[in-house]
Amino acid sequence: MAGPGDARPFIPVGIAVLTVSDTRTLADDKSGDTLVARIAEAGHMLAARTIVPDDKERIRSQVEAWTRDKTIDVIITTGGTGFTGRDVTPEALEPLFEKRMDGFSEVFHRISYDKIGTATIQSRATGGVANATFIFVLPGSPGACKDAWDGILKAQLDYRHMPCNFVEIMPRLDEHLKRGSASN
Image (cartoon, rainbow, N blue to C red; front, top):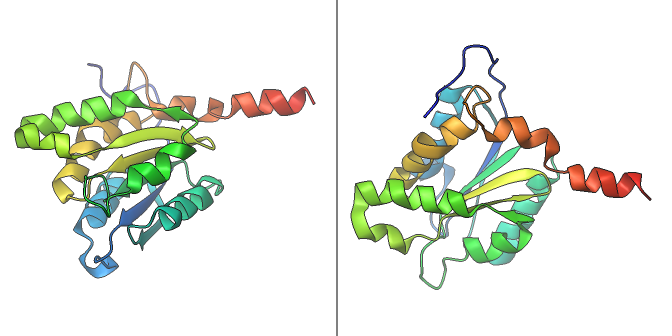
């Protein structure tokens, strides 16, 4: 697998972090802290961060608002991907996806399996694109956030990563909308 290319410049992107929890605060949000630290370490910009309760409408409303913010290229959520009654993050966000990213879930589970074995099936991690914004839905544990960032997102959010990465296609995520508006 190719790594960062020397010929390309690093391009920082704006990333928002949403923790979904009925009990966490910014003072004890270890998963959110894990993501924020990795975002900064990679050289990206933390565009926004907040916590919302496990409530479909509040989760969806926050993410929809962030997809309209032009300073936000990527949204990473943590929490609410399990099977209990309060775990509703995938239900809240998958209807927003214009395109699903099935490969994200598959690779996440492969990485997770190497660390926690069959317990990985208890996560409904997912990803997709909505309103030209990448959205990644992660479990609420710091370990899962580390696995997703270190194993997938760090490379895919680095323009230098070859043979391809998310950053190079960001300008084209809404091209279908531009064509549609130009023909009217």
